[in-house]
Length: 405
Image (cartoon, rainbow, N blue to C red; front, side, top):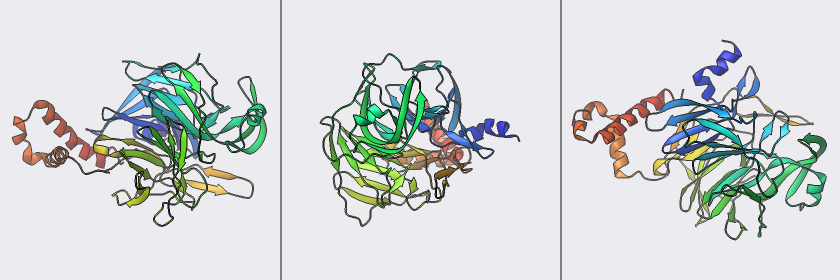
């Protein structure tokens, strides 16, 4: 099979890393990312989106028209009020600060480039994250470029320059490249950009970190070269940062490109990533924001390390992990640090149970996994419930075949 045919095979096209994913009405939506074809990184097309019914385990491919985003890596995807927003990233011509939106409530999907915004658009960046709070997209951090004037007007603690070289993006000449710890806000109702003034001990500039929202507070962890995983919190009402000073014993090692998911009013779930020891990680941790305490989690997916994956909150506080790489390789020499193209991109759907299931869920799962015994007695159930249970049976089979192939 040639490389083009291999890439276009339905199963192969699901394999990806550095994509965006979210769950809406128990449907996992997956867009973008990249995979390796013939030893080269290939960006996946922006004119399609994949939907997985988490009850049945079946995948559906949907086409998208309109203002198709360019091939992007390191972009940030956010889903709010039925619309997917894509901001930033790195395209073939360089870093970008463009935004695109996709209304998923429409019958036919069509991308729209977000223009005519108010306020000052942030500088180009990638590998940043976002919180969704009160119809606002609140972005933090990332790696990108600024003009000399922008750097002069930015605190040295907010932007760390890595290198200086000339490049033109649009009509603007950029000079400085590096990491930032900026907080920028996009109000989806008024299409307005703003930059709030924050207080308190802010995280150091970083990228490839993880973020999650609990109530009115946004949390940040990782993305820096530190032996242990750090944790910061930003109050999104007062714009005040808090750093969690946690004792070393029982603390996760530092990491990049991991995920963090809010699973209760005071619990964050961290999985995988690329450790500072150079390994792709398979560990899972819970952080209690009230006790300020880490707890390592025993889980059934220890044979599935992941980096550049996504994690979404499913039903009953399940964490649903999709895609990523199982074996990221970093090549280092005296001049540069390079990522070797990985052949181990995944299309697994991994489900982590983080809370005890309600009785109904336990009964549903038990009946579903023993349908041959219960099928006739199920005839008395309402048709909608009977259909849901039968879908779950299909999900058990799909988990072994379609989802984890």
